[in-house]
Length: 370
Image (tube, rainbow, N blue to C red):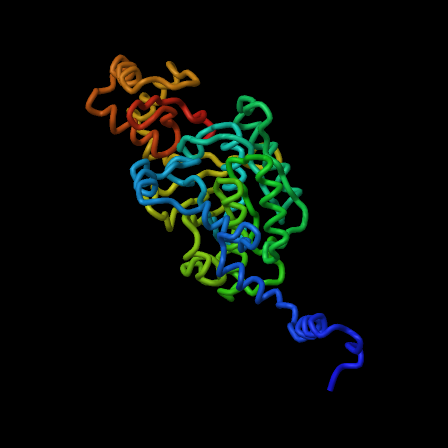
């Protein structure tokens, strides 16, 4: 039986009309499937195919990167374009460690005796303790009195609400940070930046990791996340183990009333650095972290080597032989110089501001401040 709406319509047009009515409009899933089957068609390219194509490399390019080795922002501690987790119990000093690191990146000052290899602007999202951060930053500047940073560089302190469990927030942070070309982005803390997720769920944590990776790839720099440890501190950071599996670097922060210990518990593709012990030094109404030196470490010879370096210290550092000759003139045996130098560098009183092949040493901080 013919449809009454088709009466008077020529047979050819009627058949075409009825065929169109019977053919349903393809669903978005079906259209996406066709795009995936034909990704090279510029009119129907699957949205992620271009991103995937741009991120691939041939074997020669991969081997070339392997020969170059890891690039670091903070020497031996923070690799370039890495995802870093800094965790510890409440009150241990996690934020103090990351604030000290962020300001050191800005002013190209060694952090814990480790040179900054890529100084520049920093984005620091502070989700808790915002009022106290201002006091800590003021104390840091009063204590270190650094030189002015490079033109146009600064730490961009962000305090807006953030929810990295939602893709739109990850995209917004990536877009904002990319425009600043920072040396690193800090997220303090994981809990405040992921409101509402189930931390023990690998699915929920995996979605957040995806957004953190989106930010990391956009800025081509490290993303450093501050997190709390669980009730059993020996089991690491709180929540799903998916976080530890995903990060490139994991740093544990523990502390007492006057000391803060920083240990690297995971370093992908490199040897973990030696732990750093910091001392809390009161400055005004707040405090700063400076590398701690035990009294047993500061022997007479170590002190003499430090005094010799301080007497010839210049901003660009002095060559190893220049420092050694100054120590010999001060009465230090040449055979003991290398032991004293290693002790001072290990505890952050002196640092190599040159390269591994051409080291140049400088005083990191005033010895009397410890």
